[in-house]
View 1 (cartoon, helix red, strand yellow):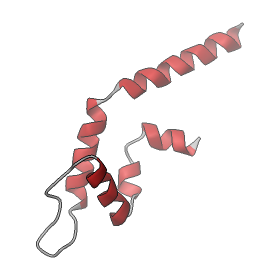
View 2 (tube, helix red, strand yellow; view 1 turned 180 degrees about the vertical axis):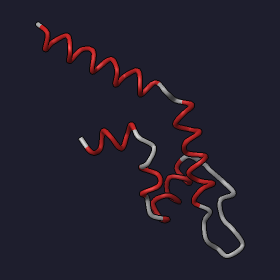
View 3 (cartoon, helix red, strand yellow; view 1 turned 90 degrees about the vertical axis):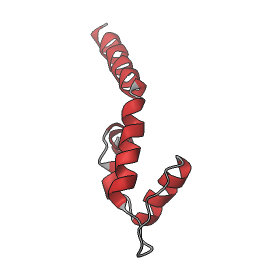
Amino acid sequence: MKNLLDFVLVNKYYRMNDGRLEEEAHRWNIRSYGNSNGTIERQIIIDALLKKDNANNSRYAIIISVIAIFISIVSL
């Protein structure tokens, strides 16, 4: 259940450590997130990941469909 909530909610990015966040940035080809100190700018990566997630809202349609099917089966 926790994994499903992480999939739906965006707070998963804020809970990631820097290494995992950097892996996600690399996975989705997000660039220019480093600063002059050699560390990463978390907010730049998180903003880009949120934009990516919002561009693909089909996951919400899938979840709504699954809930509707479940309600239909239960009501029988």
